[in-house]
Image 1: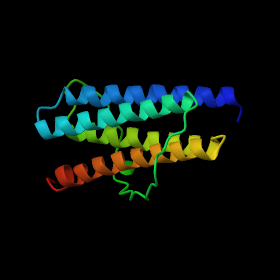
Image 2: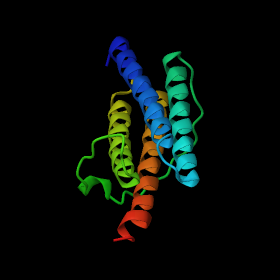
Image 3: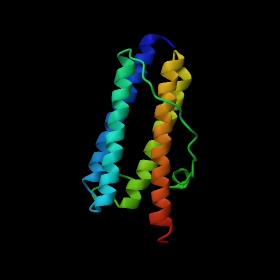
Image 4: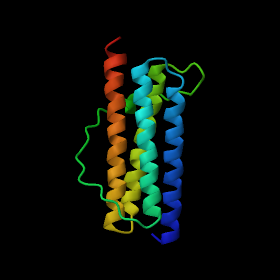
Length: 151
């Protein structure tokens, strides 16, 4: 992959992280439960951190990201129908949307890792994929605890 194409992918990923930050911040503004609100704001801040890492990679800096472990996939979000974001979005709906967004981000970073021009850059994308997988797992656990157990 040539440098220009890779830079375009990085810019796209940066925009996606900004969109994820805004998504979680927006959802946090719609929920009333303080714990849920704080959880969503924490995820928004993590997405902002991902954006900063991508911007550093784009600027040519190498990042020390450490080792990553496998993250279990409960696949709960894989079998739920799409939900539209509306002003009266339920927390259940927000979790479904979040699970699907995190899965898409995971796939994006795995694809970018496969296309990365060098080992250091590939490791950054694998780290970000790991982070997105952790987000999805967290949302799936919350869904299991709050939605499945209520029904």
